[in-house]
Length: 133
Image (cartoon, rainbow, N blue to C red; front, side, top):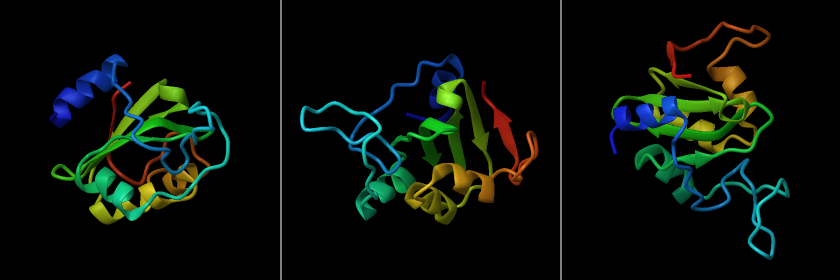
């Protein structure tokens, strides 16, 4: 599935979240298989590489970032949802190393403030972006 198909789904709010595993910052299933805000675990190298190199969506539970992130390596673009999916941005010129660091970051929000946004502002960004919704 190409970037434009995914963009259309994000803009329409119909993107299908894939719950392949409890991603870093994502919900960890309990013994009954239910997810919640229980303890979190670090992603394995394979999971981070699937996000960066195979374009696998990343489920994120955060007070601001998420619930979904996706990286497009060929275009070097990072799509992030914010505020529970109410808004979505497509950031340009995000290198694979930056996408890897995002996926591996213990706090997605801190990473966003340190790398994509200008901390303490409401509308300043470090990277060029397109607001999708």
